[in-house]
Image (cartoon, rainbow, N blue to C red; front, side):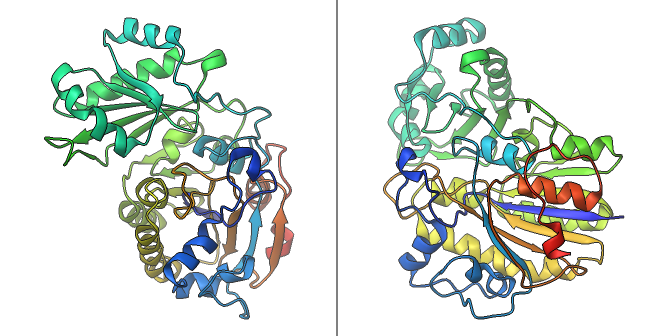
Length: 389
């Protein structure tokens, strides 16, 4: 009857990795830079868990007996996108990065997309999602052409107004693109980016974004749990990032609030196995838009929710709070940042205030949970279970 809850606070990094300069991310530190920007963080629940003991963060005490075990993990895979991070957390380490397109997609890819969908396109360049709909949204309304763009990450993004290309049609187009993008052009994610509004001044993206990811190339923690007969629940974009591989129950949520509510519901419904949630607002709404105040507000809302969550835990629970990459809202760039991610591991039956150190790979999470559940490991990562149990 063992149960684990993994909460991925999307984009909440905790300091640049040694190779951050290779990605243009030197100086990135999502939590510490955010704290300096807002005059210090007031996050009493995360402070109690030991967040301030991992790295110096203005406003968070480090001289406490933490109620959780704490440390940070490095990303061993090349890259800094969501799929890479989530796959490594589940025990799959990439040996080469997913393809990126700093000059836009090759002509043959766009021609194939046009042939398969019957649609001419606008854009085909790296762009901020909020800016590109301001730039091309009105032309899209006039012509009906979808806006196809990318970013510094391995993504093929399709933006469309929901009155021009209805949501389900947009998803169908994305599925076509997903099947098309393979081999050397196997991007990590095809992303539907629906928006609404009447003019460039009031165009806004809706919460009905949907990610269409590659299928994992090998066994994941989720698949090993499923093979062992244990339940697996994915909440938020977890389902999309793993292409549903090994996930038996999918709960689709579009905001942090919806995700946190779904976790509480699952604690009542799922008595054993793995519950994994991605809380996307930190990254999607605030990190990519360079909005420290919004980022901090979301952290405070998460912090306020934690006591409600912790009160529902039982003696068979192991909780891990971590992230998939950084997204420093204080730096000039609007893309993900190559950072360590925090780890706070706790539960009613676990030790407290143990320093798990600096882990060599995100896959240490998979190794720890595989040992906890006494199931087969993917073979990647080193368990820290003996430190905390």
